[in-house]
Image (cartoon, rainbow, N blue to C red):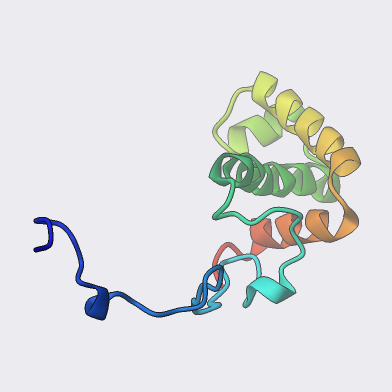
Length: 117
């Protein structure tokens, strides 16, 4: 009567089309999706989020350089990277400050100093 993989009409789910139910548990950026300051969801575009998650480390390095007055060599030694990487970090931070909204910048800066929920 029915094919091997067919579902009988009586066993089909009856839900309204286009409505998905899920628990809004948020992530490390915000407690719930509705409170999230990011322009994109980390679950929708993981590559975008990973790039900006790395930016959290960059903000931590830039903050140490500016607040403690570290030289490039001192910062490189402290964070176990090369001096060239420190220049790249500072350049990425400068570009990010121009590309991100103030809310997004604040969210990623807070990730740099408080990496978990």
